[in-house]
Amino acid sequence: MAANDIKIAPSILSADFSRLGDEVRAIDAAGCDYVHIDVMDGHFVPNLTFGPPVIKCIRPVTEKVFDVHLMIDPAQPYLRDYAEAGADIITVHAEADPHLDRSLQFIRSLGKKAGISLNPSTPEQVLEFVIDKVDLILVMSVNPGFGGQSFITSQIDKVRRIRAMIGERPIDLEVDGGISEKNIKAVVSAGANAFVAGNAIFSHGDYKSAIDALRAAAG
Image (tube, rainbow, N blue to C red; front, side):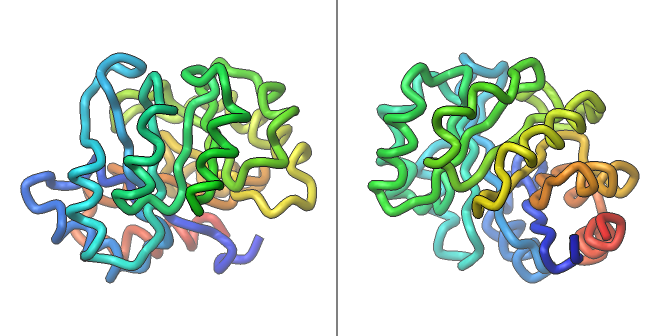
């Protein structure tokens, strides 16, 4: 996979919340492809982050894709709110939504791209009957809820199997959790093309250098 096919999505969960708009501008200028926004409810995952009002506030500061990852249960009642706040991609969790088909159709009806996320213990078979209704599949390579966790290597095989399921469909295969220069190449080789990175970018003094390093390591 060519370096320009790789999409880097810095997770603003690791940003400085006291200057969030400036942080989003900084990763935009540094060359990110997506802005990854982790929405947590303290119920589906053990943490609370932000909701539609915060997303709406930062929407004007960049034209980059807002990749909104809903770690909330239920998600369906709030899909329109996130779409109206400025999300471009809305990803729901298979484990939190018993009506995936309905949610995916609704997200697309709002004019947004639809994503499904799978926790580390969730098998890829849940995608079988909805894969033609998704634009992004997000494989969690850590247990969701906190930043800074270590990459779970078993997810590389899952990525490989999902890539085979995708075939020629125009679906982004994204991986989130513990991504670094040390492991990104292995995940690219398994078939992923989009990568969420939090600490690997925001703990670095130079965001452009950090993003460029991930791209170089991926290639």
